[in-house]
Image (cartoon, rainbow, N blue to C red):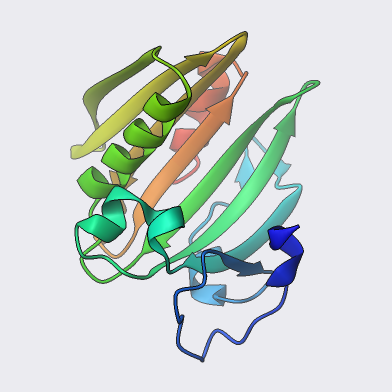
Length: 171
């Protein structure tokens, strides 16, 4: 499928509207911003990449952000659950813009979407809770302490304590 099409790319070249390009080591500095462990457990995988198209950026693209680079890690949990941690950057990207896109994307799949605001370490944060059939997802979006990247936790079918541990891993 399209996932394989850009399994390897040159991060030094222009984006040129690629929907999604992703590989290990594409953006080492962004990968380095993703915590190495959650509660002492290392990620099952880590990589980085970029989105450069309206189809993958959605409302973020409409707001004028045409390229978003990311680093990410995946932790598996149980039969089908898991946690993804991400660090995102892009000219004009804000936590509010990214949180709103997560909310809109979830709303296209299901009506059971609840968005709330909170604070993490004194910084504003957004949380989107999604019920999709029997699957539960929680997404938390907030700015890094140095303001350089937007930090994201996506937790699927895990306990609240696991979500909190994932969020705390950024500190």
